[in-house]
Amino acid sequence: MPVTIASWNINSIRPRLHHVEQFDADRAPDVLCLQETKVMNDQFPSAALTKLGYQHLAINGQKSYHGVAILSRLPFASVSQRDFCGKGDARHIEVTIDTDAGPIRIHNFYVPAGGDEPNPAINDKFQHKLNFLDEMKAWLTGEETAAASILVGDLNIAPHENDVWSHKQLIKVVSHTPVEVDALAAVQTAGPWQDVVRNHIPVEHKLFSWWSYRSPNWQKSNKGRRLDHIWATNAIADKVNHVEVYHPARSWEKPSDHAPVIARLDVSPL
View 1 (tube, helix red, strand yellow):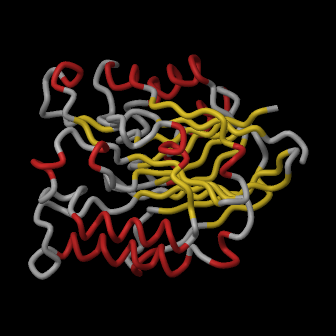
View 2 (view 1 turned 135 degrees about the vertical axis):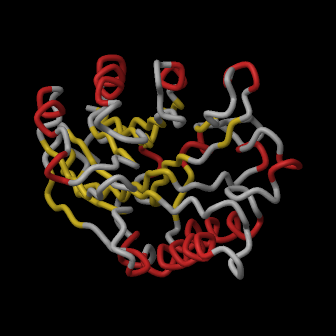
View 3 (view 1 turned 60 degrees about the vertical axis):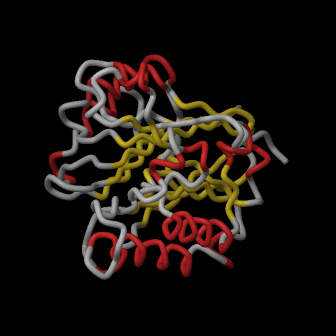
C-alpha cells in the first residue's frame, strides 16, 4: 500500500480546523505535518483530529507562535523533538512510522522566516535563521540520514529561480537571497537529501506553495514562492512516485497563505 505524506503551514490550527477537515475529505493523507499551529499542546484540537482518523498525534506547541505537529493514521514507533538555537521555540518534531518496507523517520520543520532585512549584522532574526540552518546542517548528516528519512516543512526559502515569481526582483528579498539559498543547499548536501518535489517537477517549471495575503487576486497575479518542501534521503527517495501542490486550499475562505504539498511513497516490501 502507498503512504501519502502532506506538509502544510496551516497558519493557526484552531480557526482553520475546518480547512484540515476539508483537505482530509479530498486527499486524506496518511501523515499530515503541520507548521505554525500557534497553540499550546493542551489546547490542540486533538479530539476533532482523532475523529478524522488521525489516531496518532505528535505535538510540539507554543502559545500564539510557531508550533509543529504530525498527525498520522499509522502508529508511531518513536517521537522526539529538538530545540534549535537554544531559544525554546517549537520548530521541530520527528516521528518514526513502521511500513511494509521498514521504518521511516519523518522530520517536520518550521524554519525561522528571517525578518525583512537580509543582513545579519543589523537583523537578529536573519542571523537566527542562518544559525538555525547551520545547526540543521551539522545534525542532519551521517548516521542521522543513512536510513530512510523524510524531511518536510515550511523551510522559508525558495531556492531555485523558478521557485519565485521573479528571480530578478526577489534576489535581494528575504527567502530568496543567495546567502539563504546557499545555506539551504548546504543542509541538503550534508544529508544528503533529495528534493523529491523537484525530482518530479523539474526546475524548468515555475512552482509555488505560498502567495502573500497582500495580493487580493493571488491566482491572477500568481506572485508566489515555493517555501514548503519535501526531501528524502537516498535510501527512500526513489520510493516517491507522485508529488503535488494542492492549490485549492489557497482559495478557501480565510485561508492559510500556504498550500499543502503532498508526496506519495510506494512502500511495498523490498
